[in-house]
Length: 67
Image (cartoon, rainbow, N blue to C red; front, side, top):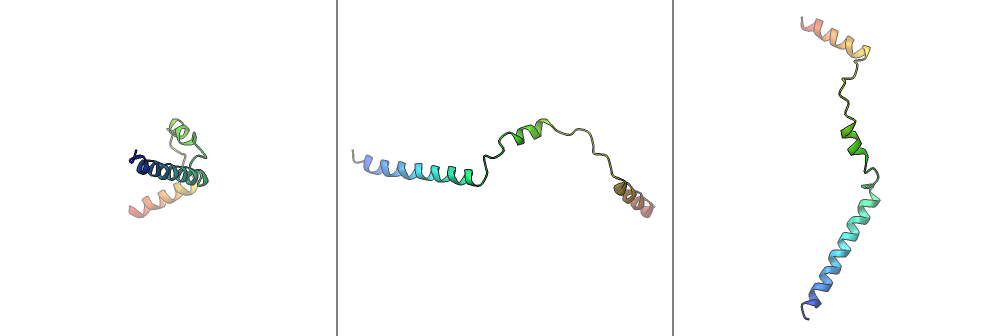
């Protein structure tokens, strides 16, 4: 019986801490996009991105400068 005088307040503190962490995570947007990271893995872009004209001209000038 005397252990309950210690365990009940300790459990209330733990529950209060858990509620605070949940409240903080909801306010900071931790639960905004639950599906996005999973879809990003599945929709991996296997094809390389095409180079723009500016990137090609930079590479050509770098190669001519090295030669």
